[in-house]
Length: 175
Image (tube, rainbow, N blue to C red; front, top):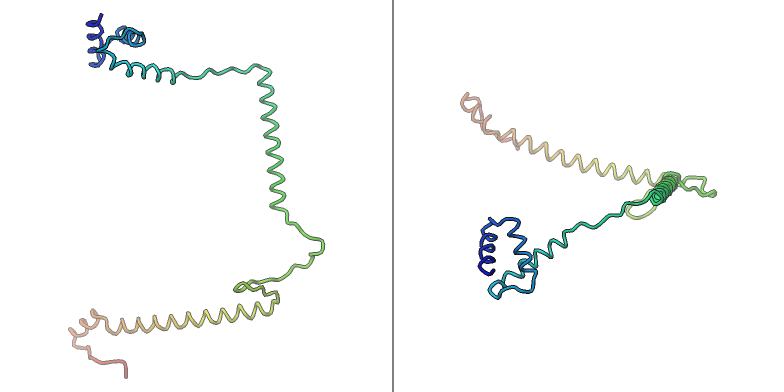
């Protein structure tokens, strides 16, 4: 029997064993009469059995007609309550709350963390900021204009072209 098991093990590890031989090996290693020279293979086949048991799919119970009706009613109840909750949420978010005493709308502008409720002061502050922004813009564009003028004045291609024609005079514009 031991020689037979050795031959089947050789076939198994070479990948040429048949389904019958695999069954013989499984039955042999499940039993209690495993030869001492084969004891080292027993954990391998035990692991295969454990994996097979863990891979068995759980049984599903098919609900009866009465259970289906209860589930359908419960699902309908959940859908209806979710719809009511959505409508309430939209009403709360989209309809503004107004206090009966608050009929006049207040004019408030927040500048540097301070509330300015006087429209005239807010307008003056906005005009001052606009004037300041225009001054900064004008100053920056003047620098850009000077840079373009210098670039045009010292354009190497233009200087070389005019020098070849003989019309270029070396002058400075800082007079």
